[in-house]
Image (cartoon, rainbow, N blue to C red):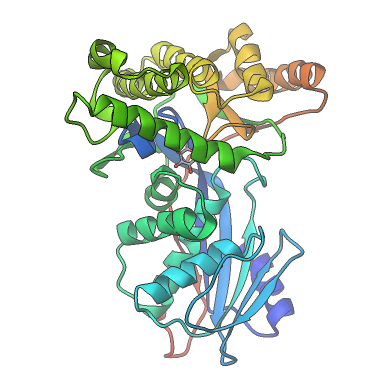
Length: 396
Ligand code: GLA
């Protein structure tokens, strides 16, 4: 891949790239829509992701090109930037804007991006592109950010430049992911543990609904506000900072504080989902995949009925999975409203699962999903340093 991209870089820019970087996408095993409520989540980095080849230029401009999209941007180096339209290059531009805001002058660079995360699949292509850009600039300019600083910077781009009030899970997962490990991340303290994803006879399947995601961003922000409303109501009696500061039993005792039925459902999902993650961690560490799978289905049902971020496409994935004896559990993953589902499938039955899932889904929805068997990979990193001059640190 790297060699193909080197050639492409050379064709587009008439020179060699200095460095190549890679940042993965992610799936979340369980703990959905609770990162912005101070909850526990269990994401893993996947082996699909975003490649970035980059080289400085002397033209005082940033050039953003991608092999995935037609649109490209060339923009002078200036004091600040605003988001323009909905183009993909807003993500790297937002990262540069944050570097500038933090007082790190950025010189001109030529960037070439290539991603193999299916577009619009909810596997965090945006976090992946933000984190790879931040990581590359930090590396090239010795800006002194830690990996955690870069995660926070990328989240802030998403919140303030792009306008999605997301939590920190995606950026954290794509930066800190480890091969064959899930991250048990506490989104309040940002403490985390990389735990073995020992799935025994099972593998993780990713099922892309291939549904174009439309209202996702505005609905997402609406859910964030609804959680805030629930928190404010509970704070009348409880000294808490986040919804996930209480468990389901405490919530039961104080639920009268929430008078709006919709807000009540949102809070119930969040608090019970957080409890489920704790149980899932125990199940995973004791190789109890049947229990882990049960919790996945329960998570899906709650996202469908209480949090209302699923939809008939994602529901169909969970629905088929329940009928297949080779599946331990399945659920939607990520923000929802389309995107992907995941399922724990017996490795020996993966092809059969894939075929039957495609048939069932196509019959019900009218078009086919894509089914992948996923590998859990590493977080962001340098792939290669091609530069031989002194203007950049040589690494290899
Ligand atoms: C999106 C957001 C994350 C998280 C998930 C839902 O992926 O970017 O911060 O909230 O949705 O769990």
